[in-house]
Length: 137
Image (cartoon, rainbow, N blue to C red; front, side):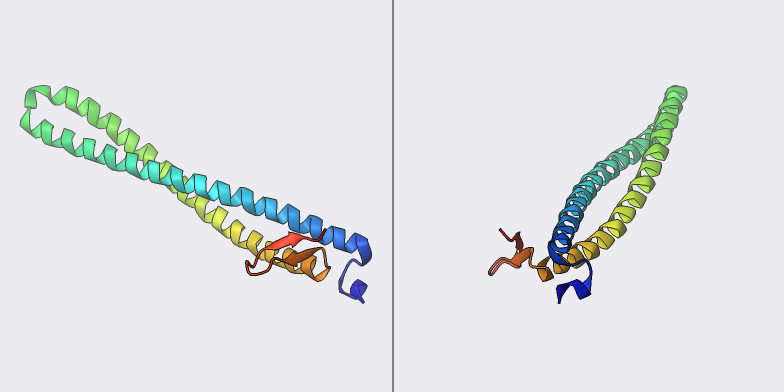
């Protein structure tokens, strides 16, 4: 009897399907956020490398051109500030990615559970040969 495994009847099947759809949407959103954060991290890292490269060039110029030392030191301070900002952004983005990945893992577990419940209730069927599921019409 289906009712012995949880919510029974048509309401139970609709509940499982709704849970599956909701979890699938959360999964998709988190996947998009993860992709965006990973792209952002790559841009930040690239910018950080550029800032470091510019900082190194300025240090070399300071040794070569003492008469421009004051101007170079001003630029150096700006680049160090930018490097600090980039490092903080990197730390925050890495932390965000880790949180998203953990949450995504939890959502994937929920998604699989919801899928199994929805399939067990007969509201979803496995598509032949693809491992995907489809809503029973």
